[in-house]
Length: 329
Length: 281
Image (spheres, rainbow over the protein chains, first blue to last red):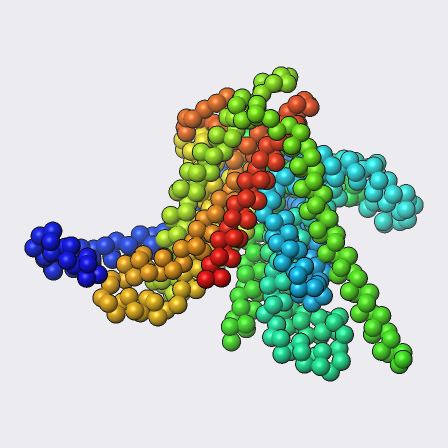
């Protein structure tokens, strides 16, 4: 500072009041720039909601609640008939299957990484899992389309169909001809995609367990599994559920990973090996060529998806915040 | 041995193996995906990819030049617009409004935007920019990417600034430095590596984003630098080529996918190295 002061004096008569007012102005300006930027975050959310509602309004007026209950999707008809039941069903089914696969595996990996894995292997596997989370979703979609789809249709699907043939309910769920494009293939890709999220968050919350608690449990003779089940999981339950909800939010809204492989069929079929569609896949494949009421219907689908993910994500964040508070105390 | 002990041990061993199995399962997928990607992508990685534009239908001749350039331009503008806003917003949350009601609201909303489906961002920009401007444009695509960049940068900036020890700020304030200079000269400098990490991670995140570009920037078969028109970009080009009937286009899609993945992995690893350096010192 002293050097700067000298430089200032050398430059000319030093006006203290002027310098102070310049400081004051800069201070105020910086404050307002940051504050407005922070408010921009709220503005973006408001903009998203507003633009979705404005875009969806014609379809809302035209179809009302029947939009949610109609299965038929015929945008080319005159007048168009649009129903969201197919995409909603597809979104639910793929997310449920994906989470059924990803939750046990993701938590299993997290337990492996925090409790069982030798120290030297922890970092490489941890990094690998995080890199898996960073791969763009279109790569998963592409891989599912070219590699996983054909593989499943030629091996796994015929196998399951043969096993469950003739069994009452399961026969219908696993029925039908094997297909490259199906709800199940999309769900498996989703599971692979959300796996790293579940693992990463579970590892983070498992690390918040005070070592003393675990040591005490080991001290009275618990096995590793008993420590995990009776100490680690109860202590971190809220956080793990938060992480799962976060992953569910991803699965519900994921677009590129499922669009190629789901078949884009609005018909609801009982079998998980049949083609279907999800909300995001329907928007992605039809929006660019749509107009009028059809486009408005797609935006209404988007609004539904946003409301759905908003609820899931807020629940997730509230749970994670509760755990953070607990860890902070 | 006491039968209870034996059964407890058995359960423990079974669970251990299941967890090991889960870890192998997870790592196998990564290996499989990366292997296929490199195997198929490297086969088509020639100089032509970088020197020629995307081929017209049916032609087995061409590269990805226009798509690569378009992607770089849109990512650069997206990060250029989004990163400063995110940095300033994060600064407000961490420095000015640390214990505000408003701050916790903004933090909450930001966390939701962070994981909101990117296709919704596409719909938002379509309604807010494409419709009023009267057509698809690279500008709209870049804005969509900026909207995705902002929450990522806000989050990391806030986290990193909160790590800067308070005595540093107090010392600077005691010298009579105004608040904005305390932040810019002291807090930013102390958190610099972390702030750059955040921007790198945000860049990695948008470099491969496809869904928000599908109906904002669209794509373009030709080379174009006009921000008000549609512009080719790698993700949408891949999206179109994957579903095409031509083998050469599929090959180009794999090569493009490899380029994107390499970029994203490099950025991620760079961000990690930077972060590791910070914790060491």
